[in-house]
Image (tube, rainbow, N blue to C red; front, side, top):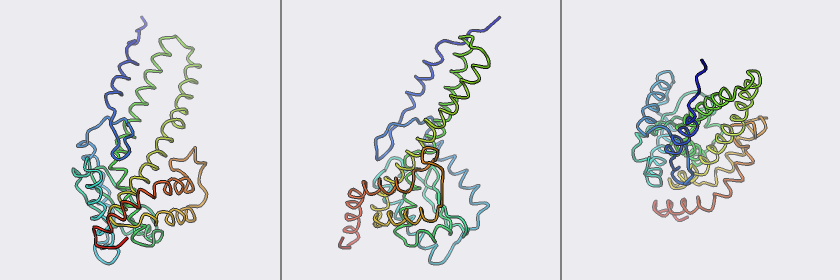
Length: 274
């Protein structure tokens, strides 16, 4: 005897997804978020502990002091600009001794790290602050939780699609083809664009955070030009999880007037004439 799938499954899925909508701090964009801040921070602490347990950490010297200084100022600016959630974060930053790794990251809850190889590209404190601001912005905007929520939502949607095809008694081979097409479509049409959106959002919010921390946001233009030179050839932008460097620079220029207002205000508060 054939079991009829519940006809309310698509409706129930939509109700659950609608109830899980949240707003990105600083941009007002609506996002899907199926986990609480406490859950995010727990995952962040666990991932941070695991990463630090196997990483050689630099704990003294000029580079260490620079990274700590940037971390403190960026955290202070983030708490001021985006108090919810930044004031709940347990902020910490480390410099990892990996000269061949050009990277930095921040986890939900404010735990972050810079790899020593990145310093050869940033070249100065303002540029490094822009990178740290960008990574912190991912945590501020709950991008990790949103990506996981998107995956859960897409998985639920695929299950519902399979149930609908089963209910309509679609030919199994045809159903398999449709499901495969849906899988490709969700990757190109949802996950990759959302990832590029996250990067662009972090670029903008991170620029404001660095500027409000007293670092010159204009350094971001030269930074991404150097990144472009160091990066080599990549995939077409529509197949990439990141915007092209040219696209990033265009958007950073558009955000620059607002960033400069934050920077000039920070300079005045620090007793420096803009």
